[in-house]
Length: 252
Image (cartoon, rainbow, N blue to C red; front, side):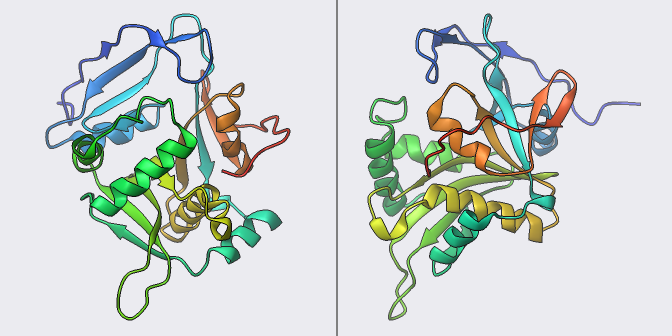
C-alpha cells in the first residue's frame, strides 16, 4: 500500500532572539507545503502543532525552552460568557465577508496602523505591500481573508475595521493572523470579537475546533487566548483541556 503523499523533508532554522521571552532564543522546524496533497499535509501537521506561513508549515523546536504551547478552542462546545455576549452585541452591526485571499490597499493600510499601534518593534513592522501580498496570496490550502466592515451606506461598502487571514482545515478553522483598528472607542475589543466570530462560524459549520496558534504563559500579550473555553493544549500525551492561570486579562 502506498502513502497518499511523500513523507516531507524537515529543516531547522538557526537560533534567533525569541519574540516573546526576553533573553531566550527560538528555533523552528519547518517543511514545504506544495503539490496536490498540500492541504492534507497541512491538516496532518496542524493536528500536531504546526502553523502555516505562506507555503511553509513550522513549529517551535527550541533547544532549552518549551514555553510555546499549541492551543485550540473546542468550537462545538463553546458558549460565550456574559462579557463576550456583550461584545458580540456591540459589534453585531459589522458586515463580515469571507473573501478570496487577494490583497487590497485598504487592507494594507489597516495592517500598518495595527502594527504601528500594537507591534511597533516587531518583525512585521517593516512589511511592504509586496510582503503583505505574499503573506495573504501565497497559500497552497483553502484560505480566506475575512473582512469586518462598518455598515454599508448608499450602496457603498463601509470602512474596513478588521481582517483575519484564516485557513479552513479538515477539523476546524486556523486563525493565521488578524489585525484591526485599535484606537476607535466605539470598536473596543475588536480582536476578541474576531475570535468570537470565528468560533461561532466554526460551530455553525460543524467544525469542531478553532486553532489560535501558540500560547506562552509568561507572555502577557498572549493572555487573551485564555478567555475562550473550553480550551485545549497540545502536550506529549496529545490534546488535553486545561485551565490557564488568567489573572488580569486585557481585552485584545
